[in-house]
Amino acid sequence: MSTVAGRTRVGKYELGRTLGEGTFAKVKFARNVDTQDTVAIKILDKDKVLRHKMIGQIKREISTMKLIKHPNVIHMYEVMASKTKIYIVMELVTGGELFDKIASRGKLKEDEARKYFQQLIDAVDYCHSRGVYHRDLKEDGLLHTTCGTPNYVAPEVISNKGYDGAKADLWSCGVVLFVLMAGYLPFEDTNLVSLYKKISKADFSCPAWFSTSAKKFIKKILEPNPQKRITISEVIENEWFKKGYQPLSFEPVEVDLDDVNDIFNESGEPANLVVERREERPSLMNAFELISTSQGLNLSTLFEKQMGLVKRETRFASRLPANEILSKIEEAATPLGFKAKKNNYKMKLQGENPGRKGQLAIATEVFEVAPSLFMVELRKSNGDTLEYHKFYSNISNGLKDIIWKAPQDDKPGTSH
Image 1 (cartoon, one colour):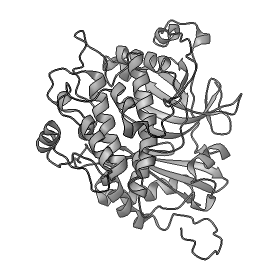
Image 2: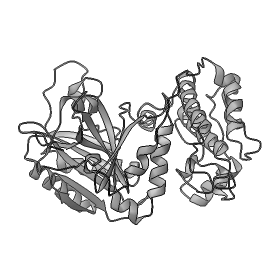
Image 3: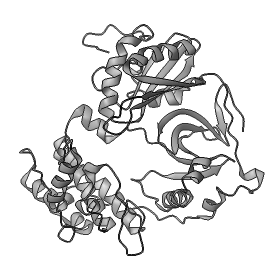
Image 4: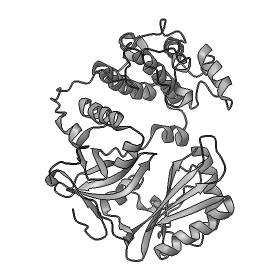
């Protein structure tokens, strides 16, 4: 392990900005210094995993990721461990979330939605063929854990009587297809009990712009009785689905699971362990990351405030010193009911009010792009995305003085 120019190095990987985080893990952008390939590394805290008795679950997750080798599923390259952390090195996907595409562009045309759905079904069907479902199987062959976003969950999952994982997964795929074509959810209610009632009765209606064949197809998938619901093999034979469908052909890969147990082995040979060390200065952002954050290669949009739709993460540039940037953000967030916790050139803003999906929390980090030029990233780490949108529109007025605008070409019709 070594740290180069303000960068943290883990084995042959140089760590960059945080792409996302949850209770037990965070995902960081990284670069293989040997090949220059960019990857995503999921970093888990061993202590947290042990405290919450999640070793079995994490081992299953890693084993599952190694078993699934499919073009439409994120590929896992390798697993590493230090004395305190587990590092899962994965394929970096830069296209963004489909949710954000729908939120910004609205509904998709039927043919485009069908292509995405065909890719989804290909991947889900492959996972099922390898014995992988949305949650782990119990002894009776039925799943029992209620999981996932409530709006996407099948009626039999909510009833908690045990369910067929393949059929429940297909229901969720049907909800995704509806959202792609409609631009909104089929089952929506602020009251959870009312939402569950709608789901259990499949109380929804297709918009007028759906074709007749699409309406019939979706109703076969969103059938509340799992025994009557269409199966994935029947989906693949359906006329609406088959239009333009080309099944993927790829070579199966032999999988070795020997290293999965090793990552929890504290007495392993020192050579098998990696070490992570941090430097107390803003991380440098290289050209690979800079381009990956931009919309195409139009660098003039790289630091824009995105005043229309604000996604789960927002970035801007500043010429102010890094410490001053964080202090200004803290000053702007405090009146909005947020407490700040700083750690080097990172800061966590924690909301005091309980939100729709728990307390809103925002992770803030400052990156050095060039001497005296910093990129600032605000990212929702917990809570509701819409509440984050509201937070950012409220805080942005207080940040006007610190935002640096990149020089713009005076082209007619250009707006930033």
